[in-house]
Length: 196
Image: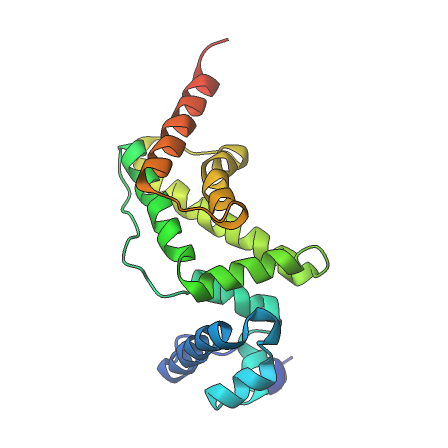
């Protein structure tokens, strides 16, 4: 049975659809800075992006889906690392890339909004889990040549201190801080691998 037009997902392979999507995401980033995540409504976004609300709902059935894409499809700060055999270099570059990504105001606002809504909104809770899973999968790909495949707990031990410094302490994540986190993380991995 053919799906009704109002429920069909847009064909992302279509250049026109991709342009519309990119335009809406760019407009949403601008609005986030102007009005904040709580006031970023589909009505306002549709008006400013000059699209229909139906278009928005086709691309992002929920607000959490929109915020999720604002996080993962944010502007490229140009710092994403390459896979490599030197785990220390790869992980350090990955954390610096994460720092650069969340320093983009719209990405930072989106992450905080998703986290704030996760306790009472199942879509936001799923989006938060998907962000973590996506970042974990990417790190595992980067670390493949090194033979290291962090578990979920090991992954949390790596990014947790950086997010705590950024979002809880509201402190600066310096290169020295990242180096210390990586050194401690690698020590923890070595202890876990040591014979008992």
